[in-house]
Length: 444
Image (cartoon, rainbow, N blue to C red; front, side):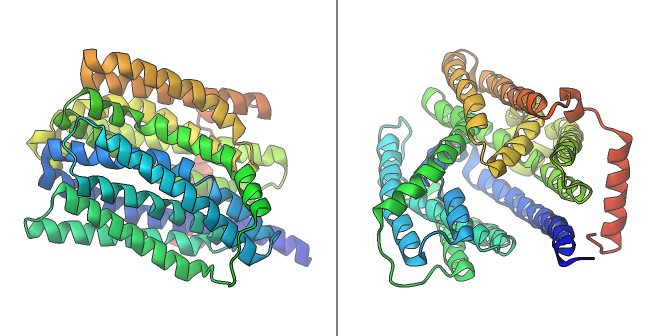
């Protein structure tokens, strides 16, 4: 076998190994997330949980836009060594300090206008979280450019571990409040930031600002930044609107339902990435990749269908048992969100593929009308039908985004939309092969 052939063969295998490792990390992080959700719900109750959600959701929405797509542009320029390192990092710092401080100021100002009883310390801590998250995302791009993304991703279990440890300690001491919960979250993010800097070591002095490089970073990343901003709006704008148009306890019930729904597709989506990596090993052609992507989508989709069906049936027992009887209203909200979350899996995998190809303008054009319609409908529905109406609107918006992405994929690839939905015999054979190899400790 030639060296070139060996390299071509080793690349998909490396992708498969990284994907399997990512799934393992995702399982561990998901378990820690469940624990943190339970602690927060038990300690804060529905109203406190609603106030906490209202505080952090605005920051989460604005972080991708404030990041200016730096994770994408840094992965591109670091990987290609197009610019001298000191100029690249100095220009990145120049851009992100300004954008993150502006976003933090917007978060603070909007929370000061909120009808909810936020204290100054709550608002300040929330605002501080914005630049920290922006720089963590930028470091992730540097890690990707240096081919150290698998190592960097493993840091995130440390973030959840610190968060759960902090929340549990405060809860046991009777000191877990909205303010202390925010402080724990910021501390956990700081751990990721500091540890991430040790992984990628972006310390090559002197740094200096080059406005031309800064312009290149912005031009490369801003379309992705707007797209990611729209994704966050699609997922979370309803929580923010509920915080203005409804009560704190209703917002808390809804936030828990959304968070539980978001956990549904984490593992099946990870499985889809593994299937994609395995299938990619069988063909290097464009047609082969699109067939592999279609297989990954339908395997993930049916994984979420199974998980969603079980979770929807178990929710009346499990949610009140874990979170307390006060969160019983979250059950119906979760069940209303499940259909849209199931279809959102299709959007997520196809979006990941398009972002990898640099075609981020496609999801942008699909998301823009979906987010606009969802926001308009939510503003009309929430005062009349409350959180239940918001859940139905969200499910419809998720479904519209998924169908739009599926239609584009079908037109571009020449495959039918049914190829993204209907399982085939070869899918079961591949899953069986993966299971056998996993039991043997193989990743080939």
